[in-house]
Image 1 (tube, helix red, strand yellow):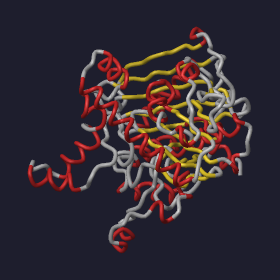
Image 2: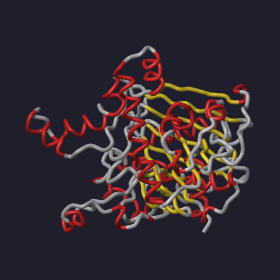
Image 3: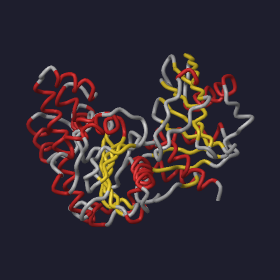
Image 4: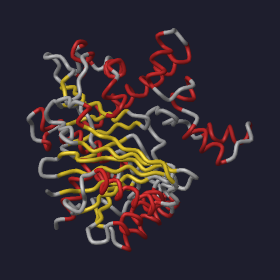
Length: 415
């Protein structure tokens, strides 16, 4: 088997998946967390028969009994120790890495700046580049790099490949990525729109083209990635031409805890009148805003329940959230000059019919018509939720960022 290990590392945790690439089957997954605490925790799940969800065809539900999950609680002082815990879990519970060693390790790295346009084999120079770009993603790149360094110690004899969230958006035109501030200052400090969720937007736009049976190169698409973090991208012929997130993942849509778009003068006002520091403002916009700031919860399920009880703050949160979605949908329709396919993905996008219908209900003028029964019907795989009369195909497409990272990793590792 051709096996690839995928790692998504945070500052005190990392997730992993082992994927068999010939059939694109998930073999095992896990989470090592609370790294550096007095007691760490590790979870390892062996998947005996379930395939990696294929966005091109409806997924077949697999009995949960086919999965086996094992847990450990023990001190995990750093990422290097965490990788040893992971290796021990594979050895004890399977699948044995000695029988099917990974041919490569793929790493999710959030920020590639304007340096990395494609999946990149990790060298000492690339590690240095990831570190230098930490100034643009201080919460993410250092943690991603810690995972890379630890993984290279654990698997020193195979290629390690960095797949960047920003890479898919490197096709943006200067008019789309340039902020209208002093040009010399922006160039000195690398200030521009970079965009994020690139692996998801790439996976979903390609899966949508395959599903509708049309060449990717001739389609105009809008992809809504709606999770706790949320972004929307206009994809023209397989290329990102506009995206909502900017220099950081803060810009754009209303999110679970992030404000999205806001008048910058609000920050000046709060600094002057509320005596808030830069760190206070950062915390406010990234951690105490969005749905949480409006309703008291960042979880859409809580907001839906509160709406059913008639709570005004939850109703307002929903209306603000949807208003922003509609604004971006209209803007991207104009940028593309029309649209062939609109897709919803990620936790909220895949599981909340009311958000999908509300986001698009004003787009009848553009030929968008949702079928209420299709939209409300539960499902796990890719599916159409537009009516037969709709001139625009509207889809729900389950994202699979790990599989996309694995595909990109293998494409580079085998060169």
